[in-house]
Amino acid sequence: MAFNGYMNKRLRINLNKNSVQEEVISEDFCRKFIGGKGFNAKILLDEVGPRIKPLSEDNLLIFGTGPLIGVQVFSANRLTISAKSPLTDVTGNSSIGGGELAVKMKGTGYDQIVIAGKAENLVYLVITGKNIEFRDAEHLRGKSTSETMLLIKREIDDISAAIACIGPAGESLVRFACIITEDHAAGRTGMGAVMGSKNIKAIVFKGSKKPQVYDKKKLSAIKKDILQELNSDPAIEKAKKYGATTAVEALNSIGVLEVKNLQTGIFDEIEKISGKMVRDNYGIKKRGCLYCPIGCRSLSLFHSKEFGSFVLGGPEFASLQSFGSRIGNSNVESICFMTKLANDYGLDFMSFCGVISWLMECYEKGFITEKDIDGISLNWGDYNKVILLMEKIAFRRGIGDILAEGSYRASEKFGEKTRKYALHVKKLEFENFDPRGYKGRGTGFGVSARGADNCTTLCSIESTLTEKQAEKLFGSKEAAKLTGVKGKGKLLKYMEDFTAVSELLGLCRYAMYAFSSNLDHTIIRSKLLSKAFSYVTGMIPEDKSLDFLVEAGERLINLERMYNIREGLTRKDDLLPERFRFEPLPEGPSKGSIIEEDQILDEYYEERGWDKESGIPLDSTLKRIKLKI
Ligand code: SF4
Image 1 (cartoon, rainbow, N blue to C red):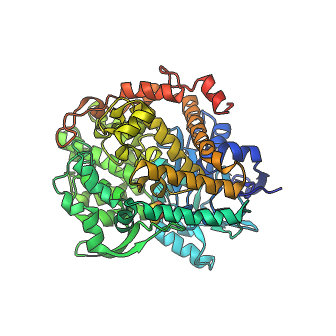
Image 2: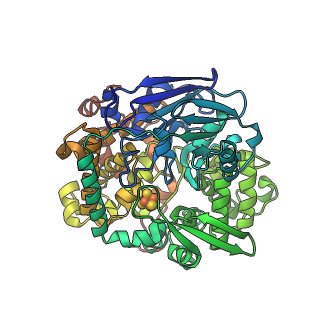
Image 3: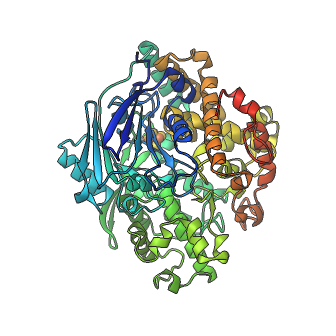
């Protein structure tokens, strides 16, 4: 019998046999792993063994949705795509939202889709509520993501179908290739390369089924409460107008913007790449994602002498920083053009810019010369050369073949002197901010299961915490100071467990945690959404639902930890690059700061219930969170 909030079914596709199989998802599985990233992490741990090669047919590509997908709750539009990562060789995943992909996937009648094997030729899959088709995609080989989506929509004669596809980078098995839907990306950890290795160009979802809801009346009432809560938060006004782009100036003002491969945290030409400037001058339309009243996104129009006229969804904070200050570039038209290009090639631009900024610093220091990189001189801000390199990487041409391996592997080829400038954790390139001046979330880059990733702590908690709250919750006033050390380990666990809830339910992390003016709003919002979970599923009484979900978040973090431990990772793999531990920030409000990571890690491991030497979860921890491995 179907239970509420779920479709109760998993679809398995075997590309070697061109076969499909349905299986029931048990209620116990749902209670423990909730959905999305939680569902996928469990399958990955159980079925993707330690010896498999991520780009071999033994890897699985897994799509998972959460229980709030399909019931029109605030910002519930995301699904998670998981596999063993070809970039990091450990747990890989990326969530994707914005449009209707998650809703239409669940609408086909499946909470989770697990794809095994490899198709003989390039194919695209069409999954409807009634059948699954394998269609030839050889004519789409080499096509950009935007062209691919357009051509498929024409072929299937359905403009409203939701499509996840790869571009040339995924076909070329670039280790940081991404998966695109509309102009949204499942960017990190190379899920596009896994899709390419399976010879899948695209997956089309055409479903309109809906899950059952346990208590429709209460769900409808709580939706109104959520809206009221949002409108009462002073942070929402700015979020509506400028979205996350305000982070460009905010991070620069505290001296932790990524500038020139994170050599410093202050960008001299900040006003040229400011989010406000871009939105005010180029924005033509405000946009929101499905079921989100915040609508923090924008559409921009450019009439450029160099790049012609083009429209871009965005730009958002990450591309302004990655294609801007990170590579020393203040030409905003080029930033936006490169963002569009990266989406069309199907490249994760954060890893791409990590590779390029590493290369630029090595070039500046004389460790890499033109001869090493196909005769290209590569100075800071030289966007024309960056565009050239992007094409080389996407098609693995010339030097692009080495750079397509990511900065860790490329630095192994270029030699000892270049290695320390490849800024990665677990082989995933850094993104978002300099950890030296933001030490709780900074340490989060280290312990995140998928590598240097800020999404596991995408919380306003650290920046809005008061000293009183810090002392009460984390035992030290220092936790409220961005550059404090004491209490940061406890704070980090708190932020991670909270953030994981959004990944389980299919909610937008920005909407849940980033756009919040203080901890009270974050907690109230989380309580309301966990009540919505109760009303949708009936799984847990409303007064216990937040604790229930936060514990499930903790379970997810431990599941991923166990996967990585089995792959051979230890505490040393949680360490940040030497730059952040030994080179003080050279200027700005955090001048002189390094990250005292060992100290924070000790406190964090203790709080998590992990062995301090090895980082392995203790038996008592696994027992407490009801996780038998
Ligand atoms: S907060 Fe912004 S990114 Fe998140 S769902 Fe809403 S519109 Fe989309």
